[in-house]
Structures are given as C-alpha cells and as structure tokens.
Figure (cartoon, helix red, strand yellow):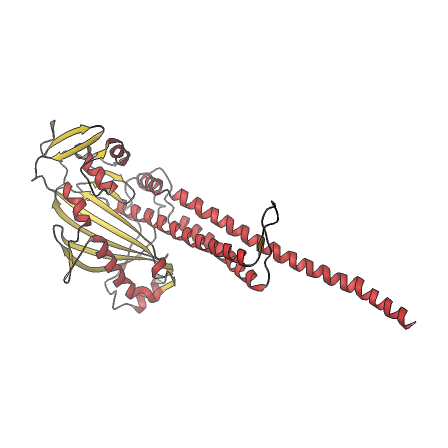
Length: 411
C-alpha cells in the first residue's frame, strides 16, 4: 500500500511474513548527511605526549591538545572529565559521491590513536550504506574505501609517533575498533516521523547488512528498540558498529565523544583479554613441560623443577599486577557514572558492547593466573621445606651417628 509521511516523503510499504520493505517513491528527496568514522587503534602501553610534542614539532606543528569536556550541557555534571588527546590535523581526500573528506588523528596518553574521517553530502538515505563500503576515496592513482583510507592515515601517523610509544604492540597483535555515525542534518518532519518512515532502511544501516532489501520485523525492532532524545528535534540510535543521529543543529560532538570512549573501553578490554589468554596458554605449556603428572583418578599435580620455571612464573605474577593496573586505569580514565543524558548513552553502548562480560572474562583470567602463580609459589616453598628437612636430618641425626660410630671404632 502507499502511505504519506509529512510533506517531504512518500513511501511504498508492504509486509510479507514479518518482513517489512520501505522504499522512497521520491528519488529527489535528498537530505544533508554527515558521515563520521573513527578507528581506534591500541598501539602500546602509553604514549609520551610531552616527548612527542617536543621532538616532532615540525611534523605536527598544527597539533593541539583538546580542552576540557566543554561546554557542559545536556544535564552533564561538572565532575565529568575525559582523557585529553593530542589532536593532529591530517590531509583530506576527495570521495566520489561524498565530496571532500576531512581527517585528524587523536593521540591518547593511554596508548591509543583514533583516526577520525568525516564529510558532509546531500544524499538519499539508501545511498549511505553503499558509499560507506565502496572504493570511492581517491588517493593518488588508487581508489580506497573508508576503512582502507583510515588505515592509510594511521600508518602515516605511526611513522611520526612510533618513537614516543612506550612498550609498543607488534603489528600482528595490534587491534582496532571502527565506529561509523550517520548524522542527518535536515529533518523538517521530525526525527520520530522520519525514523518511522524509513525504519527498515535505518535498521539495515545500523546492522551493516550488505544485502538490504529485507529485514525481519524482529530485527528491525531490535535495532531501533532504544532511541535517545534530549530535545524534540533530535534522536540517536546505537548499535554495535554504527549509530544513526538526527539533529538539525549538528549538536552531537559530545555524543560522538562518548561513543568513541565506549569503543576505546571495549578495545582495551579485548586486547587485555587476548594478552592474558596468550599468557595462560604459555603457562599451560610450561606446566606440561615441567612435569604435569596424573596419579590415578586424583587431581592433577604439578612439580616444577629448576629455577627457570620459577622465574617464568614470577613474570606471570608481574603480568598479573600489570593487568590489574591496566584494568583499574581503564575504569578511572573517565568515570561516566550517573543517570544524566550522556551517562545513559554510555551505559547503552557498554550494554551493546557487553563490556561487563569482557571485564568478567579478564577478571577470571586474572584469577587463573593468580592460581598458577600460587601453585608455583607453593611448589617452590615445598621444595625449600624439603631441602631444609633433609639438611636438618643430616646435621642433627646422621652426623651425630657417624661421630658415635667413629668413636666406637676407635675405642
């Protein structure tokens, strides 16, 4: 059937067995959108920003430190503070269908680098998903998609800042999180009416489905299930890798910043979980190599021989403390706690990312590492006790008996 939604949009909508298809009947209904993509990379334990600013002044002459989280709006408490990165403008590029791309790098002291790429263009909503995936960015003679262009910019930034990274992550172990925001800047009919008219298309954008003709109504409802609005003319919906924002005032920089920090939290937890998982595998191999024995149906017992395993498990204890500090610093890097608007969005993103589940996974691995260390320490203590007992027997029993025997023989 055909329906009208406001003076600007006419839709053809039909439903087949729970599938909803919405197609705009007016191909000239182009709106002003802004696409904002940020890719967050875990590069090391920390970045020495003071050293970077002093030693690479020529390469990053236009860089600046971001200010305090300001202005404080949307019922945001004055106590809220976020990390202050070093922001470095990067060279832009032309993108077919999207116009000129602008870019910058945000270098965080905690060991993360964010590449931000953004552009504004007048588009149909159906054009957003293909343009975000296709190779439309011109770099020299090459054509890149947004992810490839962001990766190119990251390599350029790393060539400048690598000397200031403390304990850098190797290329094969480096991880990243990418998040894409579709921001609608023209919505005279109101955000709720626009979302209702294009709910299938918006859900496809959020889910990232590459074959967009149909989504089941249950998936559409799940994707659009919890929108956020602070004023009557704005709305934001969040998913795992994308969000859709309607705001004619373009007043969403704080929302993007909160989304970036939630992604950073997920990235650090995942990287820490992977590191601990690797160390646990290493500890398992060491246990096997140094004498894991099974005695009947009894519980496995390990006997660690020599100084090498003790030194190795001492390093495990050091890693455990380091992981605890990383987890604590991650919790304290930005305390976004409270029932204010941005806090609600942050809680929603953390729920979507399941950061609590990742935190529990890290804590479980820390407990296992602690058990492994305690076992190694107990084994070492038992060996020392056994050595002392043997020494005591030799000194207090065997030697007197030998002396008595010698005296008897001499007599």
